[in-house]
Image 1 (cartoon, rainbow, N blue to C red):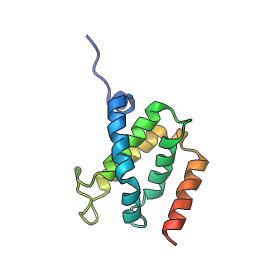
Image 2: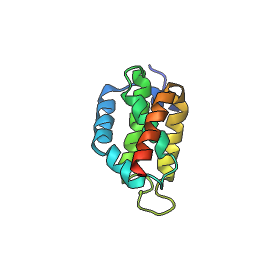
Image 3: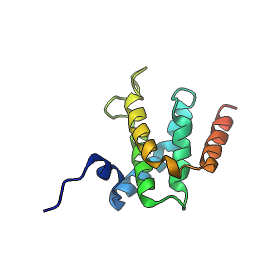
Length: 125
């Protein structure tokens, strides 16, 4: 009989089917969401850096899966606390993103951060 997974094992386990679904969700809505919330969501620059990390061939598959899962949660508007609730809407997204960030931060490079900053600079005009 197999031992039950700990929460951290479940978070970092690579599931190709789930990764594909999350990646599709992110590719469909990430940039639209970024343009809409830039300047209003404090972790958007980190989310963009994480996106670039997930697209980097040097990033291990388990880290990509964690990032895509967190970004998919960010992109989907209806979650535990709906995004349209002023003041509260992104608190659950921030929590999910923070947990994911902590587990993959070592894979996010200065290049990923620089690209994120460039995107935000272009968006702000």
